[in-house]
Length: 279
Ligand SMILES: [Zn+2]
Image (tube, rainbow, N blue to C red):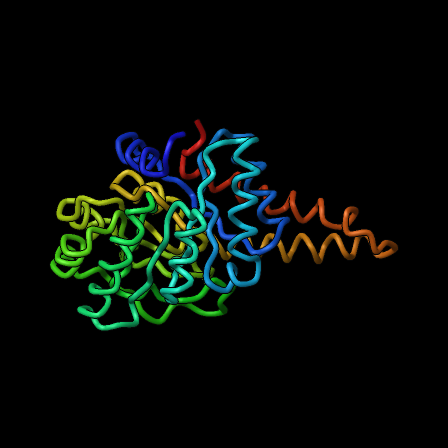
């Protein structure tokens, strides 16, 4: 069984990235897995705390295991975990990776807790993603433009990475969560500096509203994992609204929901091709 770490290393060497696609419904999950299988692309299934609590951690693990029989390279990540108990539960159930988001804590406190989680996770073969500076925005459609653009403090990040021994870092290079009026531009020069100084796997959050050109540049410059959520939520909702209108005369979920899956599939396929993760 090829591990997630195997693919991170391979992606770094060959300059492509693995998509993390978040889900909270079975239609979204089916769509992600269908496209992964079709394009032979490793994928990470992401569940934020809200998504995990709604869908169920156990359900997510069981379905990952089931779908691995169709296509083996499907991994699970707990996205933006803030509750240490939930993170431990995910690790114990067999998540492949957990993201501890201690960005709301002060630097030392974040460092201390992250280090503890890394020790706990590594014993169980689970990877840990860390975050220092909070990535702005939320996974929604926003009317205006993002307020703040943050850049990673490289010296702090170096210290954090060295002391915590995290596997990957969620970086700030102008990226934000969500979709905005204009597509978001990244600071590729800053990414180049991060890549030179920080030897671990680099993760880009905000894969939804970011300029395609900049995503390609980010991959060329060391990003190996890109998180996508807002566009999948948008596809799910638009697909559902359209299908409900079209099938006004039925209450059969199995007649209404296939079109929702198709709509989410289209989005996942576009992203996988942009990230060049198809094998
Ligand atoms: Zn994020």
